[in-house]
Figure (cartoon, each protein chain N blue to C red):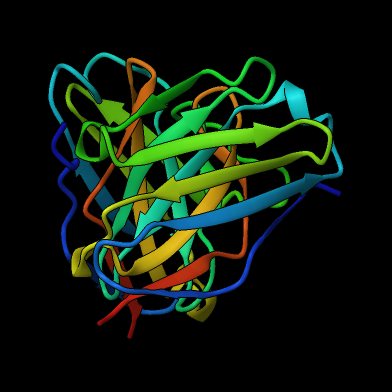
Length: 117
Length: 109
């Protein structure tokens, strides 16, 4: 079955960077796009960006341009989300999600990123 | 890209039907017929409930259905059950990006 397993919770200081991994299994890694979505405490879902695991091409939401980097390692079927210049507003649960045609059909378990001095 | 607009909360009694609206613009909801809906229980990852406007993934009850009119899409839940109490989000494709709705908390009275 399709599984997306994310790395564990992180605690970072303001101004630092965080890198979260998402390991895919149960399907052909290069056949589906992977998205990142975040959710601040008590808030709604926010789409961050998408990566094509086949060629590594990316598209980022305007809100994250210049701070977000999505990469992938096809040898381990893993995608990475790196967010830099962290601020308190970046404290959230970060999800990876497999892209169906225009939707998200499978989700990771989420990774809590805490930003605190 | 601004978030799509959903009511903050909707409630109903067990067995009743409810509808959650999701309003966008002619640039997103009004243009693309590939809207999706997600259910999220507290502390859990979202779950796909509707995709490509009206389709249900395998395993999702036929009590969930969706429709669209103009710049608004709606999710209907019939025969409301206690397990349906959750947050619901719509999502639209917008030219290789995505935009979510503001989210609706469904309460089963």
